[in-house]
Amino acid sequence: MLRLDTIDYRLGLFVNPTTKALTGLSTEVTALQTVALQNRMVLDLLSDAIRQLNEIKRGMQQDVHPGRGSFFPWLTSGPWWQLFLKIMTPVITVLLLFCLFTLYVIPCIRTMILRMVGGIVDTMFSQDYQLLDED
Image (cartoon, rainbow, N blue to C red; front, side, top):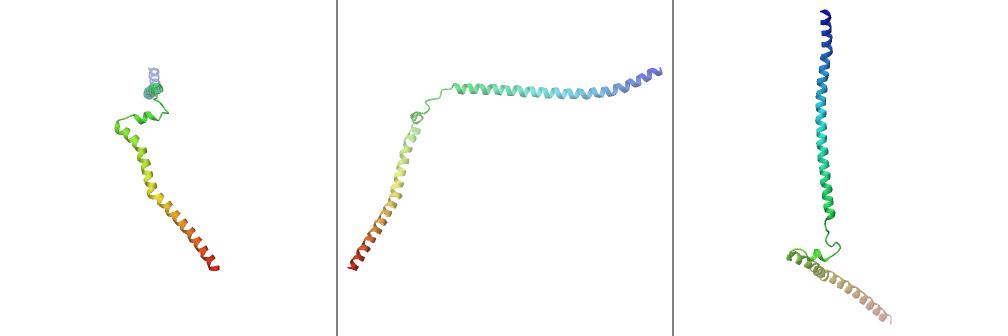
């Protein structure tokens, strides 16, 4: 009987740590399963996203691009007021530049020419008077 008690005691000493170790391993395996499942879900989402992006890319490549390089299709498209603005914007810009030129640049050039001519005339008259004084 003593031998049975000793074997039972030693078996208990062996079984208790083994049970604790297996319990710890069980929780660790459960956590690893959860991580593996999460990784699988992320991979599935990423592969679906890549597949959709490839479909969008193919669709965009198959789209027909209307007359690139042509100037007039964008000019004549849209409602009448947009068409009017597209046509009138260059005209208004040219008129505005013409007004600025006539209001500011031409008077400046005129004043500059008058000063230059006046200076030349004054120089010539002063030289003529000096020649007359010497005679």
